[in-house]
Image (cartoon, rainbow, N blue to C red; front, side, top):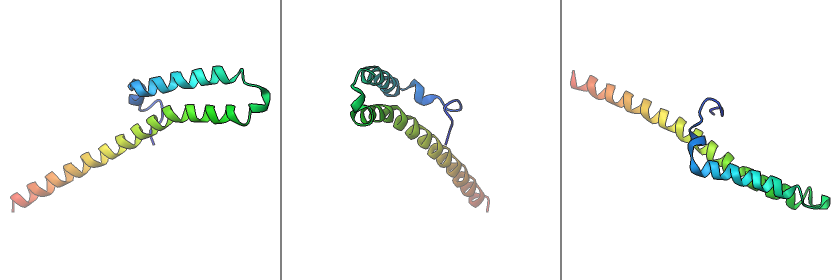
Length: 87
């Protein structure tokens, strides 16, 4: 999987940027929640908010890897076709 530094195309996504903004807002709001909600609602809201940009970044990494595989497959297919034509 690509690192955050190595593949930052997900950072250009408006959805990822909005997800990060939402996570920051959720964290700042949940600081004000009562201590007895720390491991309940607070934790659940924070994990849900962080999962949005995380899932977008992960999907981008997977799509990038799949694209590399598809491109390599296409190169192989073209080489095989060219070899057949030369027979």
